Length: 461
Ligand code: GLA
Image (cartoon, rainbow, N blue to C red; front, side, top):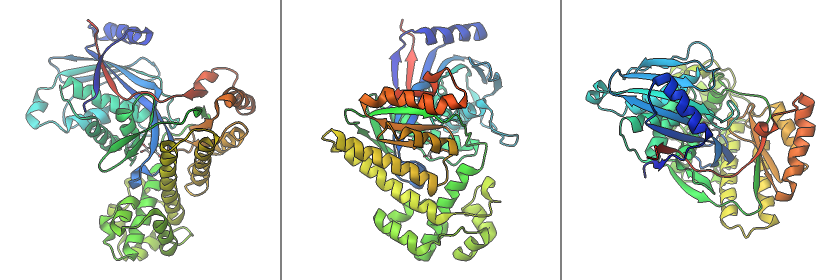
């Protein structure tokens, strides 16, 4: 199914973005694009290993006003938030996303989406591109683990696709966006882009990969999800931490493969290895214990284990920003991945079979807490402030975990309705106030319900 096209119902935000668009580009926008951020309920750092995850879309989103002009072949970008500079470039097939000078610029995420769409076009169509003018308005907190970057990449791709009259199925757009976001340098899985396009109002989604598919997850009555910001940020494209975890999982898969007489150079993900071996997750856990040592591996250890050369490890297993890493923890990362994949299945089954009531919520909460402990201890992608927030959250929640990539950003808590206010008050008092925060709480601790996925809006006349 292609992305839905709806009539725009005017509101303050659409009026504002229209006015900004008109004052800059001297014409009305032709259409609007909305792509939501997401909160992942469970299934962290396993999408890029090939395992299913369970996110839901947020109210907070990226909203674009877009206009095309017949000639010029230019992309022009303006952000209503003036801390983001304007940007302009030629629209052609050699858009460059240079990663040399520090963290990526905001517009480079946009360029990822544009590049992804332009790559699907035949050469002759590239000669006749229109100019695309865009005003961007974003409400997803940045570097908070709520997927502001994927929402921007996906919104850009959708704007380009609609400007060029391409009608792609949602799954294809999601896969394309997952691929083209890697131009920013991080080797993410496909969760964020998948939920951005496939989300449905009122339910979370169980998302599985290759082929990409999603199943509705009806959350049990009485389950309230609260997001809280740890007030520490991580831009995952600005450090090598994220890619380090991706390659640790890959190396774990390759060493287990090699020890089981498979061609390790053909294996990229733990999930693919599991399929090839035809084992279940418990058997994979046992095999991890047999094949991997618990102490860190040096690059030399890896070369020896795989009976190969440094240059083959560099090209087959590592990324440019992980080639100089000295120690890789393979056993701990694989243990997290297989156990987290099990928890996602249990979470999904629990929601599916939910008779309602306290037991269901307790089970879901326990799975979320276990997920956090595993991310903190085995995957080492938490942050002291996140751990503190999780500790403080224990009094009034059924379970709390970091959400998104980690190393900062937000937690998500499962809370019973009667405890929501008490929980929010206690976070304000015991977490935010000691940090000197006295206002703006609505942006850093809020309840959330599942919202719909990407949509295109056209004028209502
Ligand atoms: C980021 C990536 C996702 C996923 C999460 C961690 O958001 O973009 O693909 O790997 O981190 O679960």
